[in-house]
Image (cartoon, rainbow, N blue to C red; front, top):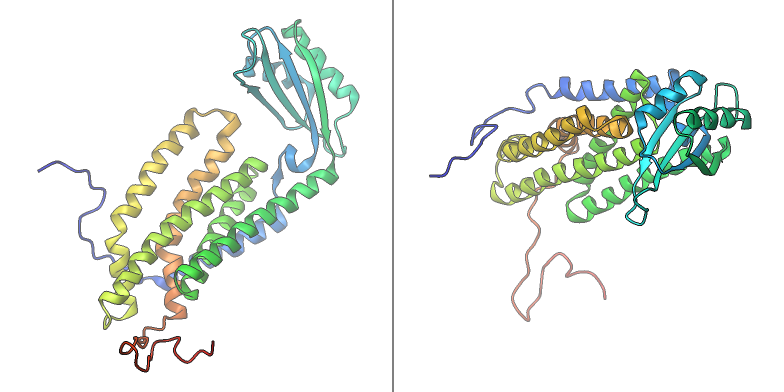
Length: 328
């Protein structure tokens, strides 16, 4: 018999509802605390949401992000993001970088004097460097990006609500979307608490968390629907526990393998993607928790209609199926 890795026993009998008011109360507290943190401490917006300037550099020398960052460290700039641009169409001696600088505190945009200082500092370390493009983003555009980010998260949540509602029952849809919003709100609260940079890459991470979490939740709900037809006399709470235990190995294995890749990126992926990877790492953890302790709890609180629907009658006779009395 082939050896197989198991992170959990083949059969488990964990009572996920034993402390349901504690776990659900903790979730409610975390959501409210997240709202309070965002309202009082605010988010540490990045250049995308705060406004700033993007400078495109080009040189025949290879881009060294660390050297560029060190050259700019003495200029008392705002947030600085440096990334190298790769394109197969570039020549062998064509090296492009994008330097994004946020406006200083109390200023609406990066001044031409600051841009000149940045260009002069980079020319010291690379005399061949040129600056083919300089673009600025003002506060008005940044405010629009914030609203668009909120609309993106809201649209994704509504789409998931409609999908789950049409595939399952409305109680499942409400439980799923509540768990997803719980994941997103708590993740944003962590960014407010630690004042981590919040930009468009974090919005992308939040949308990815929605997709990951809904996949995890739908797997459990799909098994629950099968068990509803299989164990018609079993109390709903016991059936939900059975379903969660039956899918626990898959849930833990999926979360663990995803976390392995994310932790590697978090340690060695570099500064450019660290915020995105951190949001994803925390989202996987909180998403697994909400799948087991939030979504099912809400469905249990709402209850399910487990009454048998009438089946079709004899062929050619008076049919008594659920659509029989609807006028054409």
